[in-house]
Image 1 (tube, one colour):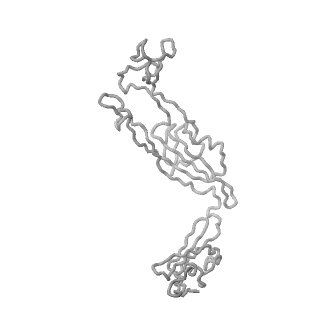
Image 2 (tube, rainbow, N blue to C red; image 1 turned 180 degrees about the horizontal axis):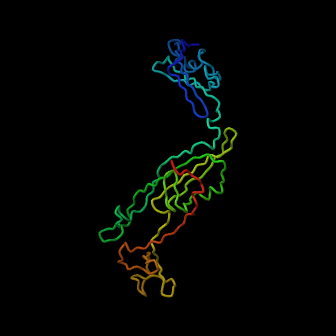
Image 3 (cartoon, rainbow, N blue to C red; image 1 turned 135 degrees about the horizontal axis):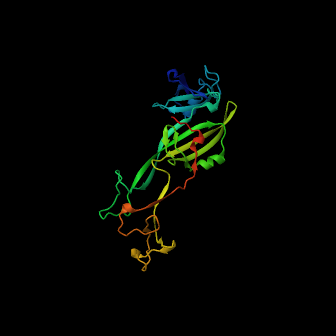
Length: 293
């Protein structure tokens, strides 16, 4: 054995405790002797296996519930001196909170970034070119929407209910984690659960992720098309210049909300948008999510 000395670095000891486990590190300074003018080829193994060091499975010197589970060897500036960290762990112990259903809810805030067409400036005025027409292609800008992720221990988890919520929007106004959202201004992005057991209590670790919007989660589209409604309520092709006879248009024409074409020179702010509700509505209050942070 080429070990010259092995001394514990008492002042470098470490101890960490969580609600479920205690861990310790006892570092040792090991000096290795040269063999034929050079360190042994397996010098790190020589340091790790120094006889003065405790062996794997050996209990900690004062917390006998912790045993040595790992030895980590690190070099120093000297090729003959090595630091060996002896790492101890206790078995995973029962939580300090006997009932996992009483654990606090974990709440994390972040943002989701989207890109959308900018048809108005910050003052609400339409973004138009010098001919008072829309830009083609239109300007785009980034939109940042707040999103909250909550992790909670629940007694049960029903995947059928969870699937119904994912992608849905709130039917009524709701306050979640301190943020109040009007109807259809919150959307469920995630609702998933993982089974767990602690202290003999079976439960699910459930993750809820909710995004909030400054406007409703409704879909708006320009009222336009290549057909119009005639006086008899029938659909007929729109002709160029909106005349009774002529060449049919090949591109969509803006409509007035009643199936009648707008004049070709109608101002952009005369554009009519049709709004549709596509996402399913759910009562978010039924999830009993935290109201405050």
